[in-house]
Length: 87
Image (cartoon, rainbow, N blue to C red; front, top):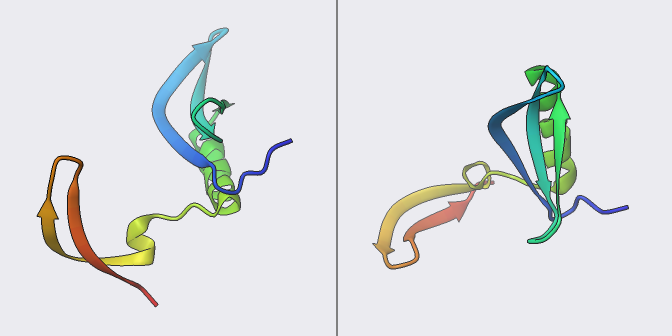
């Protein structure tokens, strides 16, 4: 048994045919070596599970938590923006 806290959930746009049935994928990555792919028969089921699993993981989008302000600079590894936490 594994805890979902701190894991990464990725909704893929991929779909797979398995034994003639179309399945929609959702990937749960616990660390760099351990991941599990879940398959759903409908997009609605995948969305419902995605919502609940991301809530259980404590995963949130940066733009939901912070207000992104002006660009401070950029370098080899990325771009730096100023930001503040939303209340």
